[in-house]
Length: 113
Length: 114
Image (cartoon, rainbow over all chains, first blue to last red; front, side):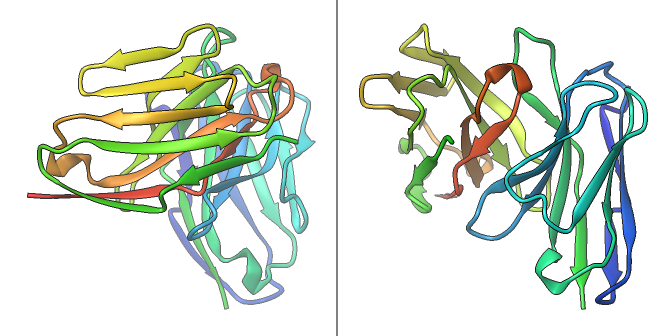
C-alpha cells in the first residue's frame, strides 16, 4: 500500500516547454486534488476531481490542465511553462465521506527558467 | 468563497512550553477544520481535525478548539519537543464540504528550541 505516489520528484523546465506531473493512489479514494505550495502562501488548489470522469477548477487553474485517467490516476499538465509556475506541487486524495482529511503525495519541485 | 487567515506566521518556543496557533475563517457554514504538519522537505500530514458539532478535541499533547460564534479555531501543543518543529497549516472547506476542497491558511513555522 503505497498511498499517493507522485512523479517526478524534481524537474527543471525552460520557459515554453510542456510537461505532465503524474499522480496515482492505491487507496480506492474517489476524490483527488492538485495543490501548489509557494512560500508564505500556503497551499492553493489548482484543480480537483470529485470522482472518476469529473474535473473542476480550483483557485489558481490558469496555465494548467488535468486528466482523471481512471479512479487511481490524476495528472496535471503544463502546456507552456512560465517562471510563475515555479513551485512545489502536491497531489492529494481524500478518505471516505465521513472523514475529510487528505493524504498527500511526496510532492514535485518544479523550476521553470 | 471561504477565506482562512492564520497567525502567527512564525513562532519560537522553548522546549516544554506550550504553543498556540490561531486561524479565522469567513464562511459560517464551514463544518470541518483540519490541521496539517509539514516537516522540512516532506509532505503535509493530517495531525488532528475537528467538526463543528464539538468545541474541543484532544489527542495526547495536541488539541484543537473551535469557536463557531467568533469563527476561529486554534491548535494547542503542550510540552513542546524539538520534533514538533515544523510548518503547521490550518484549513477549512471551500464551498460544499462534499467536494472535499480545502482552503489552507498561510502556515505557521514553529521552532522549538532545546
